[in-house]
View 1: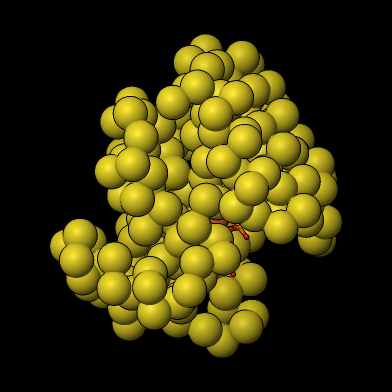
View 2 (view 1 turned 30 degrees about the horizontal axis):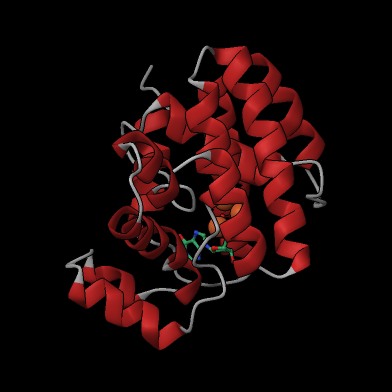
Length: 185
Ligand code: DGI
Ligand code: FE
Ligand code: FE
Ligand code: FE
């Protein structure tokens, strides 16, 4: 699948506000990929596709988790977690995509221990793209200019803190990713 094909698909699939967010992720992912020596074409494509399933029906997504034998633990946590792995598997089935791109889409919400540099670029770009506005986003943008790994840790710290403040359950993979990226002394 080419970037232009992906762009057409996403423009037709997502509402305008989410499409604008997506274009911001593409811009940031391209910049971070160039900065950290990650494949720019893969970064742009993964960024364009990352929220493909964001507005899919909840029960349809839960059905995909079962049918495609994704992690069943996903069904016990916030439905917001589903769009990443479900989008990845649906796109993988429907289009010819590099495994690296599929992985970056799959891991963009929770991260994953040992995730690739491409995965890291998409994970961080999703959090800091220019349309994002929340307390602390400027500090995250600064860290992302210094170190990709430290930006992953900082992004996880802010998102785990946000989840704690909301008193919602935290998906174990999110914590596992945090533990993996915070290096032991
Ligand atoms: O799809 P986006 O809005 O661009 O961003 P995203 O894919 O990072 O999704 C963020 C949403 O996922 C947000 O509503 C919080 C939720 N989320 C992320 N990690 C966890 C989580 N929710 C729970 N309950 N537990 C998590 O570990
Ligand atoms: Fe998302
Ligand atoms: Fe995210
Ligand atoms: Fe997103």
